[in-house]
View 1 (cartoon, one colour):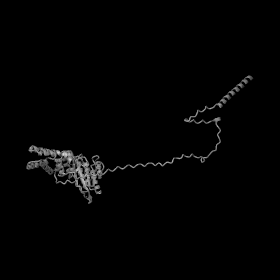
View 2 (view 1 turned 180 degrees about the vertical axis):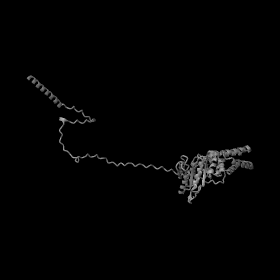
View 3 (view 1 turned 45 degrees about the vertical axis):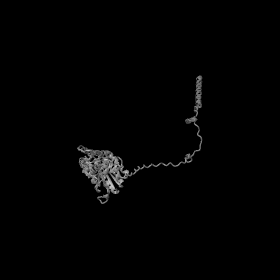
View 4 (view 1 turned 90 degrees about the vertical axis):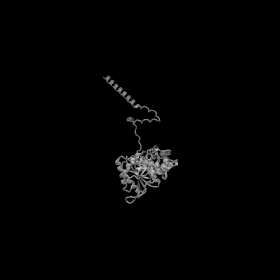
Length: 413
């Protein structure tokens, strides 16, 4: 029994010794050494000690919030205050330079070479035929065909041939100079030298007794150069010392108002315009109203140039004229015709003349056709004179029509 008790005691003692060794080994166990520090790698923060390994906190004096001093901000370099740049105002568009148009006096004479290049075949052809030794019926028929080909027209051609026959018979012998003089006289008589070819732009008295500028309506079919002619006419008037207001009453053709305004800006003429597709009569009325307010010398009204076969639009042209006349009379109605269209231009002229009272004709592109006889034909058809002719694409290529210079260009020197 005692032996059993002793064995139990020894076992207990042995178990206690073993437990003590285990606890002692745990107490003596250390953490693995920290890896060597590297200047480029930051060591992780040490783990806090807990339990028996926790350190006793050191007694430190405590400070209130008021006693804690904040770190001073680093001194800023003294630099000039940064001023935000102001938003630059949009630059105003540069005003176009005002041009000084070429004087109109003798302009057709200066453009005579350009005219003679296209018209010389008519004059030379007639002189060659008239210079034949024997002027038989075949020759006179050739003379007649030459005139008809140049669009002189049937009736004027017959008149001219009859007069030439009589005068050649009386003259007898025919030297080149005599023939040239004879032909010059007859062509001048056919074109007419007694027409008043000036463009009437004198100010008048309006319906309310106020002074009214001269009013010029420009009409014609699209494609004849109507708007361009209106702009060139403004240059002609400015060159003669007149102030001009332009009325862009062609509201149906895209960019017509812009085109006219560009012409006006080049010579300092203001353009009155309205919305695209607006009422042409209203714009024409406003243009004359502005001309009266500005005491301008002339108001030029560019009208819609639709095909002459469209009756409604032609009636609208008559309406424009009636509305403008509420301010006072219209001084000129200029019909623009393309000289290259020949006899078709006469059809247009007749229809326009039925709607408005045409007072003058402007023939454009006269330098681009050999059919200068249209000058005679259209005057005879309408009973009104050709007042201006276009002889090129240049800004100052619109010239007052001078019969003498025109005939001289036809027959040459």
